[in-house]
Image 1: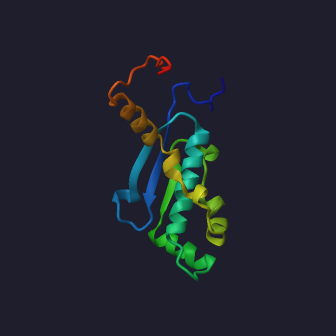
Image 2 (image 1 turned 45 degrees about the vertical axis):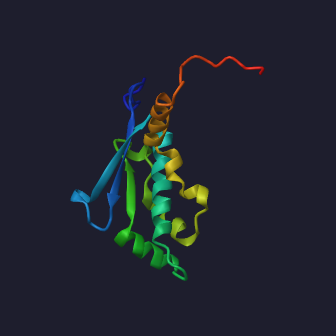
Image 3 (image 1 turned 90 degrees about the vertical axis):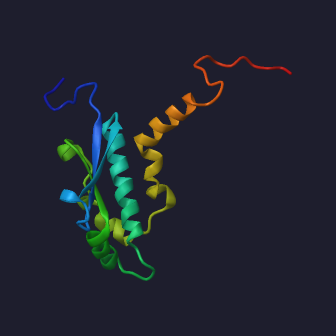
Length: 138
């Protein structure tokens, strides 16, 4: 193991920053529960991609989109990832110039909180057990 390798039980966190200045220290929330850096990076990228699209108005130029995002959007940073973490500055010009597909914007599908809630919801279902169900031939 090298000095830069995270411990095996390391979970990653993504900090969401409100660029409009509406939140204390511009931090609107932190999302935790990412078990690998790749998952945290793709979540951060997709979250920002969606934020840029929410700032896109019909007929706006790439510069207009970027200006709106810097005033009203949300940025994301993978905490403690250093240079290995995704950085919005590397892709903002491309995001502003090219409209995103729905899949490129779907950060909710990548949100580890959703995965935990889905697991918890299964436990509340009547008849939910850890045992596999026997097939029925009736």
